[in-house]
Length: 334
Image (tube, rainbow, N blue to C red):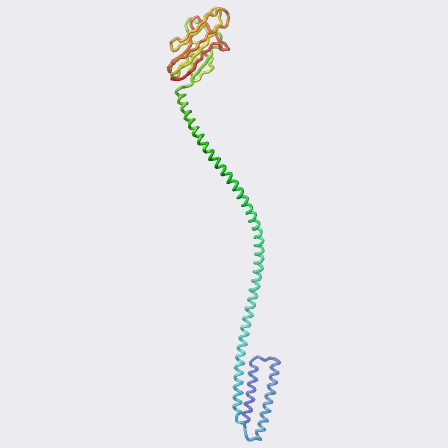
């Protein structure tokens, strides 16, 4: 019986030692030290058991509670083994968590390096933007100054435009007045044109010839005043020497005849159609310059003719000085 108890005690001690080694908490020198201590304790316990066996040999009474104590020791060993296993699991879990945390820290450090690089790049960009902002600020300031200058110029231009608009309005009013006057003048001109159309401008003046003496002739001839000075309205014909009235009206006629031949008669007739309206002549007794002239106002119908003739046996003269002339013009139409 005692031998079994001693064996059981040794077995428990060995189991306790094995549990301590399996927990992994002690390694190397600590394990060896703890093993040595455990061996000494086992020897001590064996010696104690041996001493107790020897003593029990001499004694007759055995402690009845040894098995209860051994059971308590076994239960304690089992509990410590369970606690060691739980501690090992917790340690493994903590190691895993530590590894994961280390990996996260590594990833965080990588991300932090990337973020630091980005931050450095952002700082460079910010510096560039700040420089550009300063430049833009200077540009904006210059633009604002230019805008203010343009506003002032615009104010001056608006004032000038307003003045110009007022001047234009004044000119428009004056133009309207001028247009009214122009319209009135145009109406007057149109009226004058109508009046002139009804009352044409007619005037003529012509000299007889540059050849000297004309005549005498045996018959009465029409004098052709070929040197035309004026012939407004073209009513006088230098080819025929006849004036034809273009309109019905009152006309003024004048003529001058010059004679220089000694002891001769000179003179001329003025005819309206076939009627002699005036006859002037004179006798030149001496070799001198003698002339006769006359003038009259005649009312003519459109198409009437006025001309001058040289009487038979009469002589007249003209030269470069235009001493014998025939003139006429329209006073007013009827």
